[in-house]
Image (cartoon, rainbow, N blue to C red; front, side, top):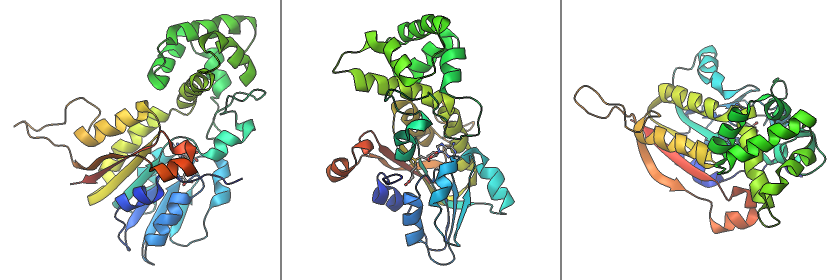
Length: 298
Ligand SMILES: C[S@@+](CC[C@H](N)C(=O)[O-])C[C@H]1O[C@@H](n2cnc3c(N)ncnc32)[C@H](O)[C@@H]1O
């Protein structure tokens, strides 16, 4: 089984307009599909710095002296570049979310298939896992994360049901959680409903939105003039953040402005967004929710 089929591969790497001697960052290495394509377009003097916090991603490291891989969280971007004595980079790619490997390897506990321990940690060394979130978060915290991370309208009722059940028995397995949630779905809505609940928990376990904000903020600082940042998002919560950051240069509704009211947003959108083509959707159904956004640093 392949580790991961890269999504929007040529569109995302095209959007970076790779300069053959440039310095690039792959924030989310995974199976290395995007990195391989970036390396294909780099010349002998080009460099690629890549991050992935998942221990398993190390088995995919491409032997290439232009690639420097860090098995760590990408929030250490600036610190790492400092260590490498790199002041600015020409392009940054972030392909957010989980890899197919993480979803398919059942003992990683990302999938809602019955019979598995709830885990969902991308970084196997971190303490917080899905069991911790489901059993220790307050009802309000759970309700908020279902609403904000999964756009689930009945978030309060879902949280309440979980809190009632966990006083009887700790929820540690996928089939236990699924049975608690049974009253909220029918045969037709089951998979999409469970996918949203699991996605909400996964986002919290891995602090995905907090880290995304951090990497966008750091990227703005270390992109060179005319440097390009491209991000592939997979759900509305992360897409909203990227869209707003590229449009306004901050996470507020309005752009940052100087005292005369001129926008200080350092980004120029390269295009609105791109979605996978029909042929990609046929070949890789998991690409269906992907959106590519790209911006040039002025
Ligand atoms: C969608 S996959 C990337 C797939 C990759 N583009 C490819 O072509 O194979 C996302 C990867 O990013 C990693 N990841 C997500 N958030 C991360 C973070 N904050 N720091 C480091 N790695 C992260 C995950 O472990 C996962 O392997």
